[in-house]
View 1 (cartoon, chains in turn blue, brown):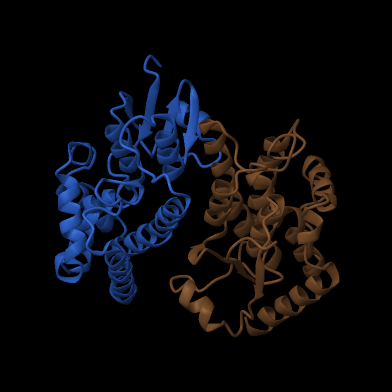
View 2: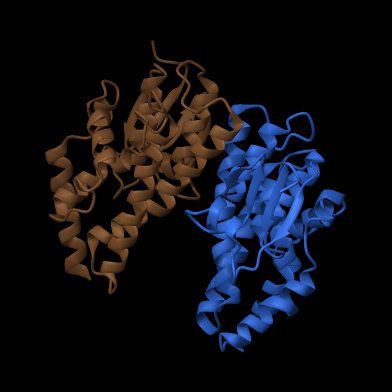
Length: 220
Length: 221
């Protein structure tokens, strides 16, 4: 390992994308290493023996795991630029609450949507839309969840924008119809280089991964 | 003297609300405690935590904070004496990692293993023991997870130190045994710690409650 900061990741992981966005916001140079999740590297197994999952940030040889733990670490370590968490304890608590909400609700509903069919899929789709509506209400009239600037909650949520097209295709709906403010928020985020360079092409997520996987699972 | 407007909505047997009480006691913060009947939640609770409808809920100067680990960090950042989190960013990341592991991996696997009724209960018991081995290693050579003194992870680990044993007694089944000497040693120090012991619900009442609850769920499954 020659670089001081190394990121073990997988191209379409929303959790990995969070870390990419955070590092880009802070202007941190790092080495990106793509993991083959069907054949995990020795380094990954050594650096995250408990979960054996990506993303893993390795800083000066020391591993940090769990995406929102990593994002907070990045925020606290490179603190001279682009603060992601606010300085007020109450606002920080609010941001952590929503980060946790996104972790617990968005990922699992989304996953159920693309890995099931019929009634189960319909239910997952309804739940996912509900969760995004809750987030939309919380966003209100703000540009970002972080206010005038991209913040912790924006970083936690924006990677799922790469997955919207896959969700829409699988669930036969349009996010824009149900949660227009979320879609416009996402487009605003995408105007930032830190986001546009970190997220992956939604068409690739759908056509190169989700739809073939559904076929393999016998869902389509 | 009670701190201006600190209120905690909790449940006597919830390890999550007991954690918040522990943190407030460590910081010497006085608060008003409101006991919730979880079978009959108050309108206030539903208003303050409409998304999860759960305890604990902390109110401070009219501001509402929910989710026990979020509340713990809020308390630590608001009242700076007797710090709960480490200072160093890397140590903080490690603390948050283990706290997440305890709540999201260990305790759910332990609950499944104790309640049984799973078609592959042996597998779940094995998984729980693996998680315990991992936690033993984390504690090795330390007085507490936080080092010399109790810290964030110890507070979150109240489930391991006390609720695990309540469940075990109620279910008449043991998973965390002397097979894990480091954890057992830590647990003995923990439950006898002068501040912590005031936050632990009474054993007999707790065991009876869980016994009845387990019998009820067996009957309905």
